[in-house]
Image (cartoon, rainbow, N blue to C red):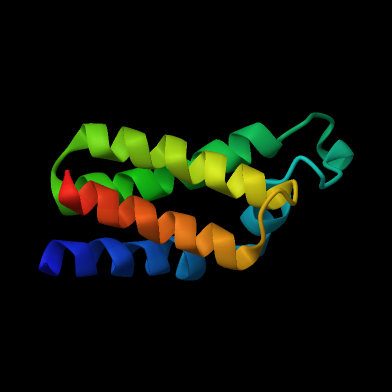
Length: 104
């Protein structure tokens, strides 16, 4: 049970404490990034997902769960950024992933 708690705590650290305003803004395809001379949202979103994947890998010791978390977190955040889901659904989906990784 403690591993599930660590996964949830790791999510809180990576999603709130470690996510700066630049990442929060520019992981969205709806944010104008023309000032950078290129579309940057895919890189920013993937980098954010990779941070979450690294946290899951460190906690579980399983790099495949880290890969799964990277993909899942990126897809969920993308859905939130383009307004397919809201903030609450985003956080619930992330929590469901942590429960799934714990079960696996």
